[in-house]
Length: 250
Image (spheres, rainbow, N blue to C red):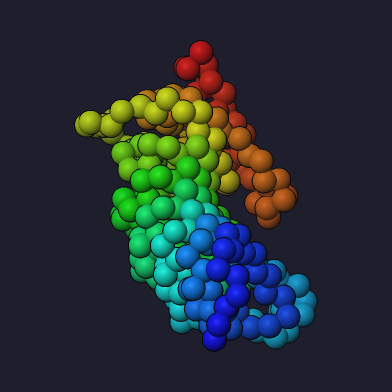
């Protein structure tokens, strides 16, 4: 099938009346468009969608990501699927995205890939130009990402400016930074309602972050998430961490 928009740079797809499984076929039509730089895909959770299918089959999500990986010049990728649509897909589904070495911004919302330090490190090792990394989901499953992942971001993504990820900060790693150079950038960080040590001084967490990102700016800008509305027990502690980092870098 001939596709007429060979100079197309930005594409936004909203799947609110048809199945997500059709999107990969549409993406294959776009393969002739080597100029594509930005792709946003939204799958909202309105009542019509909920009635048509309760969740996205993991094979569909895998096929979608595989199709996306063909756009080697892509710089910005954002996928937002309403919580409950994707049922804990295998994090190996993300591996094809390592082919997108020009990525500067990657965002997944509503999908719990079960990320770990090793998975994130594997991905960002291919994304040296990355400035924004957002993986956001809301579930009862405890995060398997630790504070130590910040060291990997410092090593592999020196241009990082915006980080949002769920992690476990109840245990502070040892400060063995090796050859890691502290970032000079003011990196904005949002850890949502990630669990953090509550019984001891949060200064330990602040110092760990500040030693890698001395100009980190911790802020919760997404006040519409379920955790915030329910009254997160960790929000105040993370606020203290942010204030301490600001004091340390002053």
